[in-house]
Image (cartoon, rainbow over all chains, first blue to last red; front, side, top):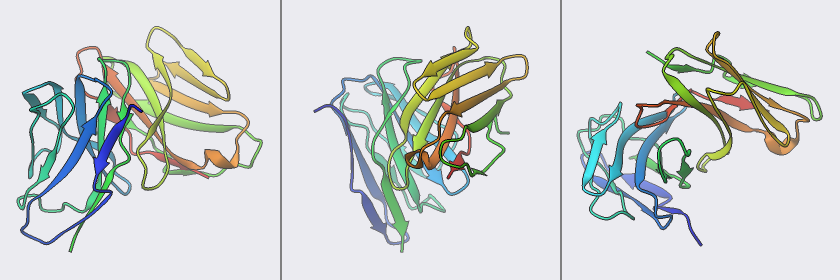
Length: 112
Length: 109
């Protein structure tokens, strides 16, 4: 059953801690993306990767880091440098440009 | 500066009537437009798309219209059903672009 798996669904982080959000896909899609959703803000691009071992910053990359060591996996680390990390994080994939995205079910991160 | 704008944060429509969601864009290089539907605590799901070489695309109850001269697109849902209640995002990409740019969304109820 092909799809995108984001885990965990809910994540709580203490201030000053780094946390890593997982995104795994078995769709064999080349491109992967991380977006952040805040109320009233729409979806804002954090990082994206078109191929393995390559990734680019999006509009709001500060305080985040990623890796793309395997085609199937694109983990996002929210570092302590991210000032306002509480948000809903969405991972997406695309087989090639202009095909449209498939989204995962998201991870809700809350800083406590 | 927002390149994709959804100026109506919310829209309320009676069941069976037409829902019209609007989207404006500023970048004339955009050549591919999509609409996504999102329920709370879930990822967005693809609804319908349109290329800039077309001015209309239809899929069942959903029709997207593109007016390139006005840099405006709209999503029509006919007839509207209770299950259509969700947040609708408009998104755009240019030929040289590397990622979709999303509007802020319109909540349809």
